[in-house]
Image (cartoon, rainbow, N blue to C red; front, side, top):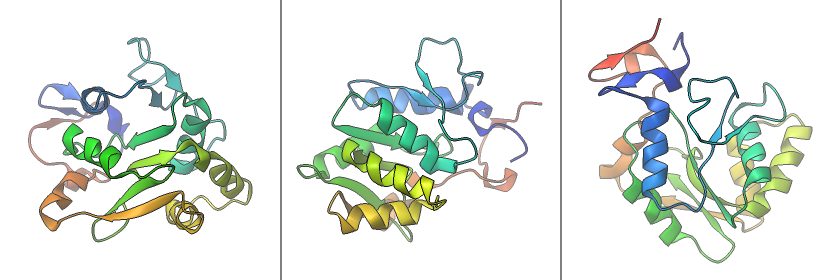
Length: 178
């Protein structure tokens, strides 16, 4: 993207704040940001959980968040999914079964808008130690241990998972910080 995606301004609001508002709207017991402690969101009254392993990708962030999580479940939402809604995320919690989280599936798995049980921490740590950082491996291992299940998402809801990885992905009125 060429910049910190969390700072992209959409409809007058940076992505990080937009996602924080979505998570708060779910009624989550606690909300924190997985990221750098000196990010744009520093000093706004939200706890920041920094990755304990640098350069470990999303799995490293999830492992750090699972370690910090004081609840039974960790609801994950990537910063670059600006179309995601609190209603959809609440549906994930409704779809969860006792001890079993939920990973949505569109045309592929969507592990960065998912619900994980805190028991997933051990698997995340094992994969990181082994150098296996792919989220697909994480989900496969969790599924094999009956810690998550896949949830097919109706095609009409696939746009919720649009993520911004390149400048061409950005739609609408967006301000890119310089």
